Amino acid sequence: MKKFFIGIILACNTISLAAADRPNILLFTADDLHAESLGVYGGKPTDLTPNLDAFAAESLLFGKAHVNVAICAPCRAVIATGRYSHRSGAMGFMPAREDVPDIVTTLKAAGYHTGILGKVGHSTPKKSMQWDYAFDQRDLGNGRNPELYYQRSQVFLKECQAAKKPFYFMVNSHDPHRPYCDPDKLTKGAAMPSRIYKPEEVEVPGFLPDLPGVRAELATYLNSTRRLDDTFGKVMQALDESGHAKNTLVLFITDNGIAVPFAKCNTWFHSSHSPLLVRWPGVIKPGTRDDKHFVSVVDFFPTFMEATQVNGPKGLDGRSFFSLLKGQSQQARNHVFTQIDSKAGGAAVPMRCVQNENFGYIYNPFSDGKYWYRNNNEGKTMEAMNEAAKTDPSIQARVDLFRYRVPEEFYDLKNDPNCLHNLIDEAGYAETLQTLQSKLVAHMKKTKDPMLSAFQSRNDRAKVDEVLEATYGPRKMDRRKPKTVVKKKNKK
View 1 (cartoon, rainbow, N blue to C red):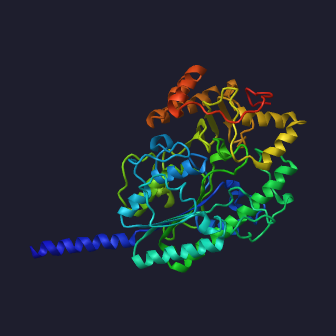
View 2 (cartoon, rainbow, N blue to C red):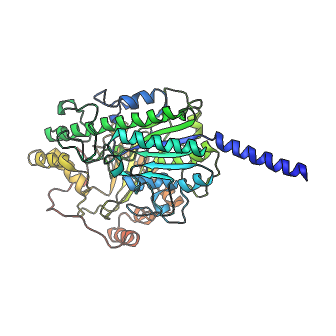
């Protein structure tokens, strides 16, 4: 009997030591960041993100990382639940089902201390998902004050040290989300970035026209991006000073692409393409790149489970990429699935996309030639495009595509990552198109996507509308404007 109790005591001590040795996780997210803004992703001006570029030298950089939903709240719900939107119920700005497991509750049960800074509501898709430590936008200088992020991070890390617990810390900058940083009109509590940029320093993304109004707005976006980098640097400073850095898995991502037309709230390449920098001393070889494997945020939950050796819940849609962090390879990581369901305001604009290294296919069941699409990310960039469209037919065609879309899109991403030329009706791509469509159908069947029946009936508008109403309720039409020229194809 004495030996029995000694065995129990030793077993308990072993569990305790294992918990103490488990790695911490710090997930830092930017808000509406264009992946190619980072210097290490080829961004210009080259001095825009010095802290992130220095961090990349200590990290593994993924070249084929994506978010699965290019809108803040549903994207973060995917991270929290490890499930695609239609599998968790968080199909837009709505909660996940309470019966869906989440990462915070799972890690807390395993002895982790959990904390979050910024974007608390968007990153907490369930009422039962409770953080141990939480401060939101108003306590962080409107989510745009690097010093306040530093101070709040210090407090959290000291709490973890006092509790002798490993931690899961989600730090969410509200930069570079709109309103962009105009030095003459700083929002209350926000800090000035460490550098200010001018319109002539802007490199306009290829999916936007190079117009003075676009450059002027993107210069303020650069200011916000520099302040994001300042914030990241201060949080890393707090981590280094805490003594936890050596045992902390740190990841940097964005929640979606830049908040301008043809990026955020859509499924084009630059809508979902995300930077992903991962540092883990002693595990990840510093300064390495992975330009082979597709990874996405639905994979985070299972990856964190494997990294922490915590038994995760069943029913996760993602797949751990833990072995990639150790420099190994994985099979069947050659494509990614992305989607949109409903957006801010509740209007349903479902889109489904599959991308591989060379091509991308998009199905837009909401597009019927009449629905006038809009989102809250258009700003002065769209104003400039609307004005230029009055005299430039090519820009008018781009505006029309953005407003009305087309039911199906197919792009050569290797040669046209800006998705300017829709090849859906090009006979020479029929076999490749069918291959991607088959992959999308298999995925939709596997995940019980309600848009599967819409896709299968895509040539029957009345049937598609029935599916949309059954899935999302009575159709909400956005603010409409008189229709001009509707492009059925986006070809030259």
